[in-house]
Image 1 (tube, rainbow, N blue to C red):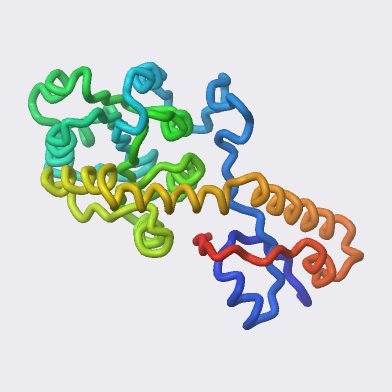
Image 2 (image 1 turned 45 degrees about the horizontal axis):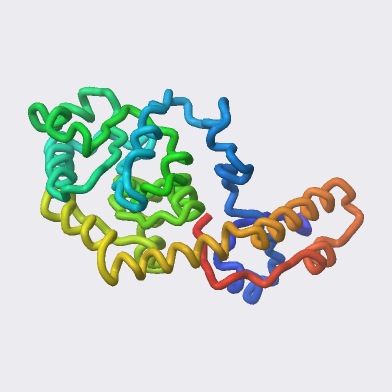
Length: 270
């Protein structure tokens, strides 16, 4: 093979282009949530295989802007342990802040909840088996997201400008967390679910200088990778890539030269 077509995310594109002469076409991030006005409210738009509890959206409507802590460990994360769930629950309660917690209705996840916990936090805390995450993150009442750092969740948080409290559990979640905390500076690391650590992490991310700095960073990142111009370049590059494959009559170097846009300073893992 004398050439390869390689559409990629903004990932080390400067280095690859300089060291190996590869032509990089930026086509990501690839996230459809919220691209169409009111799309999050239309039926049939939830891509998850889990049945979302829509009552949480009505609950969010009753909360103050930026006040809610959203907690979710995604679709496929293995249970993190009863002791960890118990401490996390008590930490959320200790903050005195409203929270929306996605906690699967399964003994392996809920066995760790303190006795009568759901009754204790009624009104201030909302616990559901699954939530329409795109709509939740887009809601003005959500102030931060305690996340496992799955890639889809990370993209959705960037798209909606939500600060992240990172508790990776497995696999690439640790890499994503490192980018969030060290490279982009749009979140902080939660090293354990001990109640004191949870409370301190939440206070740090939503209040004071740290909270303001993180919000500025996430707003800037959102603008650079999700705004109209960035999406226009991605769409143009992808169309040119497909067109070049169909025709196969234009040297790839010329094709790339026509559409190549200098990479932004952001580095996004593939």
